[in-house]
Amino acid sequence: MSYAGSHHKKKQPVDEERDEFEDLLADEGIKSSAGPSYKYVSPGTQQAAPKGGKCYPIFVGGSSLANGQTSSSMAPMSCDKLRCGDCAKRIVRFAEDCRWNTSIVDYLFVRNFNTSPDKLRDGLETAPGFAAYACQCQFISVDGTKKIEEYSHLKWHCAGH
Image 1 (cartoon, one colour):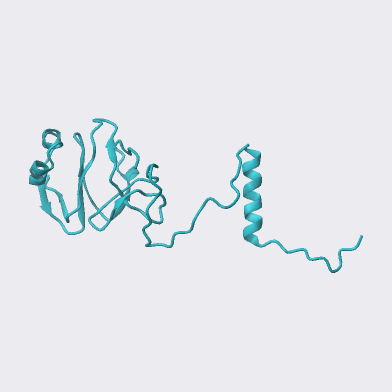
Image 2: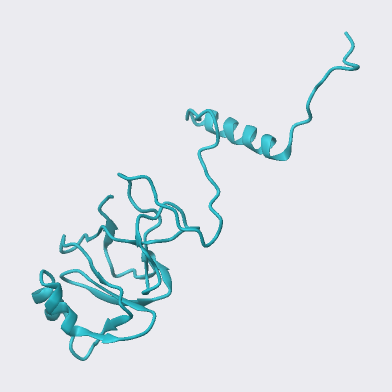
């Protein structure tokens, strides 16, 4: 049997990596979908995640970070469905270039006014680039974009979109 003149395509490196990945999945007893289950999102592009899921990873951020559901680290969004695991309250976010005025705001302040965002606003001060977050037992001021894990004292999680 001669193979001369047959049309065997040489596998591309991506195909070889995909085959190795498929083999690993099969070894673990996991069925793979027909095609790749990932989609490239160019840096700086924000894309809506499919409805019904939870943010992963969870991000919080300053005033320039848009609200929404994060489905990729490449397109972070500030989760607008955050809940606290300690007090079970929804997290309120003020993203209008402001932070908490710590001479006014403390545990009792957020405890008493969490259900009244207008009263919480009295504890804010102007700070370009910042956003202020609070549940009924914790509060933070954030500039830039940060993963929630950076705030180890918080037990905040995405309640689902």
